[in-house]
Length: 408
Ligand code: PMP
Image 1 (cartoon, rainbow, N blue to C red):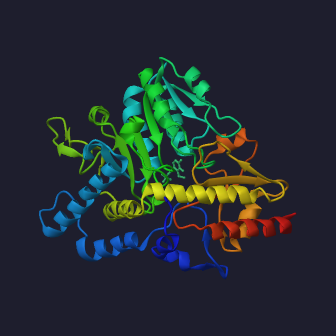
Image 2 (image 1 turned 180 degrees about the vertical axis):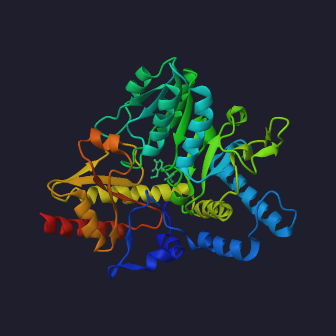
Image 3 (image 1 turned 90 degrees about the horizontal axis):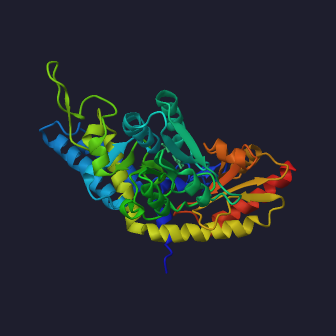
């Protein structure tokens, strides 16, 4: 049985004991940020009380210990995504910075007039705007893979859109707005048949299913620590070694150089450090490593199976809510339930349900083009994590019924 001991899981999350407006917190905004287990919170106390030092350049004990913990996390992350080498793991602030790194380094060096970048209608703004900014400067064209009425990417349209001008396909693995899981391995195969690269935005996938960048065939893969039970401020760009080797630096500064001189050209550090200018978020990265260890201790396949059970229960239960329409009905979905209710504003639902202790997200979920396609400018979104329970789903649905009857 692939299920997990949710009572034990919940004990690791001190925040789940708090109340909101006098009601027990029911936290269902995990796609925005997941809560943090005490094992991860403790990293900060330990780091700043025992180990705090700048990494890589010290020859003293604290610097050595901090460096070992920081670089040790690179191996933890490598194993987590099954990269071939730790040289392929670049630490960033998060998914957004990882995608901007690819755009500004690889994109600026490789994209120009006549070239095409394929993104999709399902993208988060962080996988749209970096390409728009660069396209304005470099003069390439952005094309968009459409979604069908279920919120799945139209794979026939993808095969029609991709062509010899396509240099890059940039798509998410799991949609944050609808929960759709995209067939990224198959999409990578198609991209490579056309000699295009594929960047996968894995922000929503990393917390929900085991990631294997080699099995996917991803050239770039990005995710954020704060959605995988880790802290904000630390994220990951995986890049295939040969690509990272060939890419120019992105930001310049300390840590990313080999030699600096006014007489001869400055030379750069080997990958991945070439892409890590300046003092990184050391404690956050170490804490991200601890978060991944926590996830591994539960097992992502157990977490995924549990979340699917919650999603099924929620999908069945909300069917009883009068006038509620679920957006995103693709067969392959992660633990996200996005919906609108006839005659009621999503924002009003979000505000009132918070009064009952239930935290959901309302708005455009940084996916305005997608919502526009569905003819709405906001939805309510409940998203699940390892510590959520079927009882919490019941509280969500009862609270929705109450709130909607008040608003109607
Ligand atoms: N892509 C997706 C699919 C996301 O869900 C998010 C976060 N909502 C991001 C990118 C951006 O991640 P971050 O804000 O951590 O950089």
